[in-house]
Length: 117
Image 1: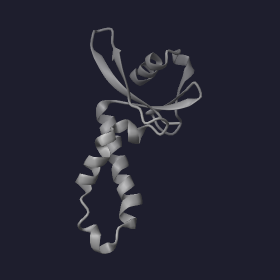
Image 2: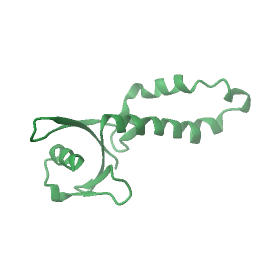
Image 3: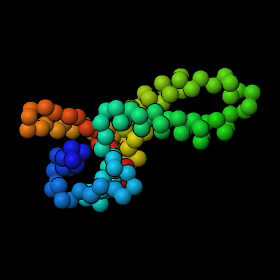
C-alpha cells in the first residue's frame, strides 16, 4: 500500500510497525501515534469538510438570526485557510509533512502526512 510506504519513509520505521486504523483507511498507527496519510486531493477535500463542519457546529449557532444571511462563508474560509491545511488536519502540531513515494517504474506519488495525536 502506497500510503504505508509513505509513512514508513517519513518515520524511518519498518512496514510491520505500521497498522491501518480500524475506523479510517487514511489513519495509521505507528510508534504509539496516529497519522493521517492522504493525497493532495484527499487533503483538500478533508480540509473543506472540516471548515464546513466548523461553520455548522461553531459559527452559525452563535450568529444572531438576522446576520446569518449576511455571513460570508467563502471569505471566512479564505481567512481560515491562511494558516494552511496542517493547522486544521493535524491535531497534534499543526504541521503538514510531504513524502514522495517513487515506484519501480520510475513514476512517483506525493502524500501528505499529519500527526493527529
